[in-house]
Length: 434
Image (cartoon, rainbow, N blue to C red; front, side):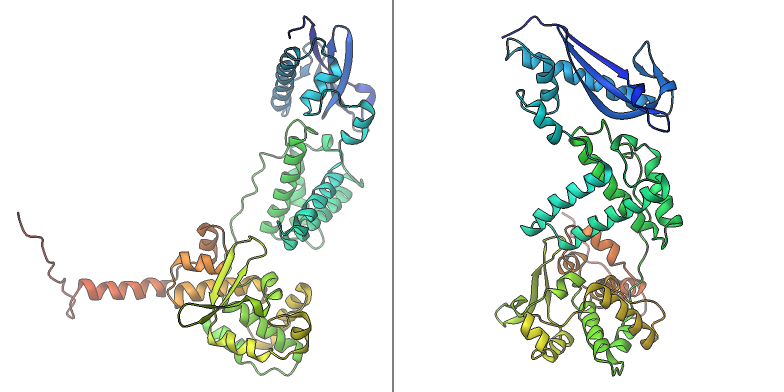
């Protein structure tokens, strides 16, 4: 049914709620036949940027995006009003606001205070972590990724304390400069600072949080959406085969370093990530084919892609070594692996003892495996991608870079096909003329 009600939508600047920096929220007022309701659009601007006559933002860097958002809100409200008119004899302002916010039209106003409360930035991070934890418990997400989200929240908290001298930040207080300031804090001002790629990952996670806020209409748009999180991928040079051999053959007398060395070599010849070797059990050894060849097959924790690797003799030796290890028997593990922190600490110690000249880490072992498979053992890139448990081959291309010796080997084979022993081009078999 169609009602004859009149709708009026007005935006105004609530100067009485200005913060210490002079920023006050923009309010949307819905009026239907004299009845009114208001809600904040979760955006603050200084008083001198509001055009009292046009009810829009005066020319400034963010004017275009905010004014476009105001126009979009007005169009959305008018569209929802038209739909509600076709269903109800009388449409109230609260019905229209609830419809715009994807709530039921009879949504209780008192209940709204808890359900529609706009979270702060750290509260938003906590909400996301809570939801992500539920997915981890259902084995739909990785525990390692959950740790990364907790790390992001911690770094955001550090940034807010350092830059804004506050314990938290309202979503409406976040502007376009937030990402640049966060980036500078992470790579320059934070103690200890982090690398460029790691900083970009933190900003990418923050951008994802603000996308969630935008989806829930807690903010009009993501203020840092235009910040480019791409950075040049740092090239990780894999270990050369002689370096892997020197680590394997190093005479060690400390039991904890022997176990760490064995775990690292295990990674170098399987490509399994830390999370995956930590969780390996005897059940992951599967016999394949008519010859019952032993393979390691496991769903990768991070991507949920099945990674499968034939067991090389050096891996057979390591597995046999720990077959009767008390820790492995008790916890049903294939090999003993320390916590991630201790593992990486001990690897640095191992690097010094072996004279490698640079830190060893779990990620380097995966790169070394990819290099061995591609450049030494001539596996196609597609096969290496499957063994590493990657979702797409583009990721594998960052791991496995073609070396000159691989090109040289392929070219030598091509020479034998194209040229004779004297270097002369072989005669081609021309097709008969019809």
